[in-house]
Image (cartoon, rainbow, N blue to C red; front, side, top):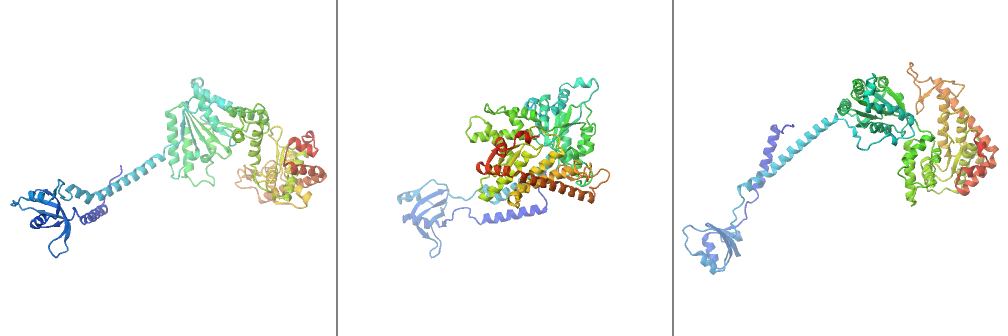
Length: 617
């Protein structure tokens, strides 16, 4: 409990405030100012008929003159209100005289000034209120700080009971392999004796890894819903605070809560926020808050005997950067990869999300699944939501195929921009996009062209959309070179038609550079470098070779850049050659685009005079 404010300084300030308050109050008159007159003068004024009314208590008489009276004579003391004292020996029949002269004798109490209590309140009340307010603020500040410090060590995990917001495996689709890995966890939580009598122990921790949006959190909640147990969920970043030691305290509190309600599941999202490998450049030393939190998680998971009925699920997008101590048996001893769904998986996910959406009879779920390669569960849910919003704006009773098509274009290609292009710029954009599309049609193994448009979308003035007929899980050299050639088609078309180039190929150059760097530095598709991995990570950072503690040599990096330039230049020369040899097809596509702005797959191949079978060889 916070102590009361004290000390000599406080009391001196309090006394000074009381003195100032008393002085101010003393300057305020405690009663109404009246002209004090002798009783003889009062009686003379009654006889003269100058007294309007009087009030009396005992021998005190107060009243009001009809006209102001000056007393003493010749002074400045003049007033209409007066006060006087009647002599105790007086017997002058005053009341009959006043009645005769028309004086009103009323029953109003005599003005006796402020009472003692009122005087004390006026004198000390403001200071007392100030002191009480000061003490209240001090207590509140001390209590708030104490409460905040007390709450720092409390876990921020959100608990979901089985009866509230229950999710089951029926709500999970498209990731059957990962789901099957977790069925055993559910069965153990429901029937632990079946495993214990045979000496089996359920994994203490399960690590879910995969790209964002694949359903890792949904899987964890489905496990809790199927097992009918409490589910504690939080992000790893919520453990860490500015004050060192708070994260470790929250870990202890979280595991204590889970053990108290066992069997239970703890789910830690984005584990890499605190689970990065220790000892790296990001660490600030042994007392770093993140490392203390990680150490506490390791300790708590080591403390499981297997009989508590608490299972830790964690999710991460980057399992390769996690500390090795987290991944050893006895902690996260089961790792489940949650990969993007294939076409059948996407169809199953779409079926789940379309349960509450009224769709037209001609909407093909299989067609949507085929048109969305690479999309994960979160992307597909967003697609259905965008289509429903678009249908609502168009006043449709049900979501129609055109709504899904336009929603997919908006997500993949970007929203349309209402800008006016000059005729020259519009024509150049048509040739640019026709170059992309024609090379995509003619290049062996390239993804089929699905749509061409010169309607500005996002940051682009036009778009060419290509998508494979089936999901790809491996890429050959010819396919990757075809991707580069197709991406350089816009720049090549501008050179072939106009003899110069513009800035419109900025994103194309970024794309081809990224592909070529991966071909050379990650996939060993360069004879000059050979089957050596030089780059690592999603950002293509230089690989740190184990045991060497450094990046590739400057000579290797220079060779990498040279090979990337060689591949791109060879592909660009090929793109220019193919477009020059098919100039009529290029012009036909550009003319059709200028006339119609957008061409779908069938129209694009027909206008270019290219058969679909030839494009897929």
